Amino acid sequence: MNQHEVYNLLCRGELTMAFDTNALFSNKRFRSLCNGINRLKDCDKQYQFNLVVPAPAHAEKLHDLKQAYRDHYDFNEVIKGLTDKGIRIASFEPHHADIVADLVGEQFPTTQTWRTFKRERCIACLGLNKDQITLIQGSGKTCGATVDWLIAGYAKAENCLLVTGDTREEFKNIMKTTLEHLEAAVEQLLQEATKVSTT
Image 1: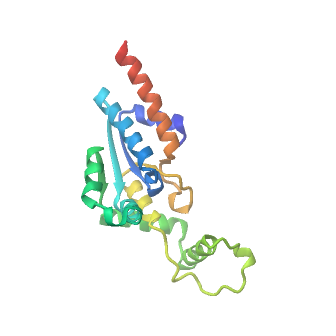
Image 2: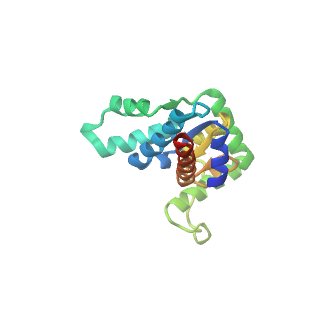
Image 3: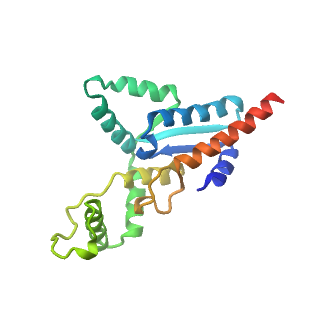
């Protein structure tokens, strides 16, 4: 969704936004966005916005924080910071898993197409061109799949607007926008709300 579409969605007043790991990358930027969304909620009670981080994205972010802060990492401080901003960590439940299975199955209906996809993704992750590789063995059976499938499955199951910079297969047919489009739409709405409150 582009900025205009996100703006129109926000104007409806009720929306749950789920954040992918890449949207959480810049702590300062993410906090600033949350502050803007919370200001909107404070200036007009019609805005019932929910901010969630799916558990798989949260796990990836915690890993990044543990690497960055090492001995100074404090899980309780992380949770307090999220709570203070009105952000909920969304658990991954059985019905989310069912949606993930549907997402994967729709795009890769056979075992062979799924394995081929995983194999080609592994080759691409190494920066290699699959068309130039003839000697790499393996069917793709043991290649991993990303947690992005879990994040996408959560967003689809809960009918959230997923905030992500990722456009790969995992996020195909998911209602999504970029952090930039959401920031711009929130800023536009804030400016309008400020004009109304000062007149």
